[in-house]
Length: 256
Ligand code: MG
Image 1 (cartoon, rainbow, N blue to C red):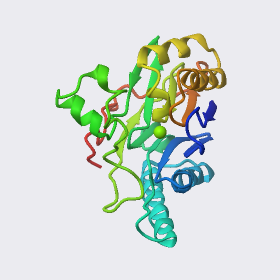
Image 2 (cartoon, helix red, strand yellow):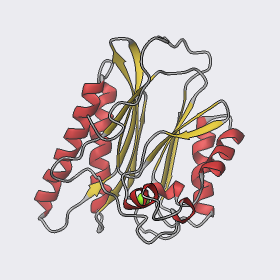
Image 3 (cartoon, rainbow, N blue to C red):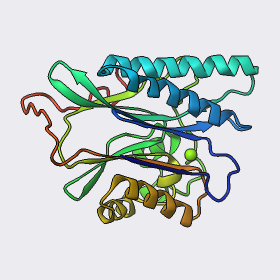
């Protein structure tokens, strides 16, 4: 795996945080201003990083980590005084032990994203929790307007809120040769899916891909902090595959 982050060309603080501690990977994009966003994303990353110490984390443990992160951010908000709420997005990917064997557990809250790259195809696995996503889904705003629309930065779910946000959650079979990309919106605000795919195709190592993607977003303007984690499933690794088991998304509409 590889990871890279950059403050960008406009912001003074990097409020993104990341986890790249196999088998736990995550990106969190903090919000709240005045150095509070970085604390929110750091608390979310810490809650997730703790999973790496587990002996084979489970899906339940991943969802517990989401709850712990929300509680920790709320507690920090209260300590700092109300009226200055902080929050963060969180996208996570954890190799978990399930009854059928190992699975990728992917979770999402907010507009950071998880992509899967396999066989030369890039697929966005997560669905943004954002006003712009709702406007695009409703056909009010075209896909081309997504990265320039004035409401593009308004998220509809975040950690650090009450009632606690519900994470979308997916379970996926690990497949040799696949590559995952976790990223904050500082990447996708500047690079479209075709461009992300080109950089992935051009970089053999996950470290190279993460660095190249971040550098490209900064070169393209760097309006926001940009963070990328790239995870490669070794093409020669032994992966237990049970073709009879379901690979359908679970809770893709927020039910879980
Ligand atoms: Mg951002």
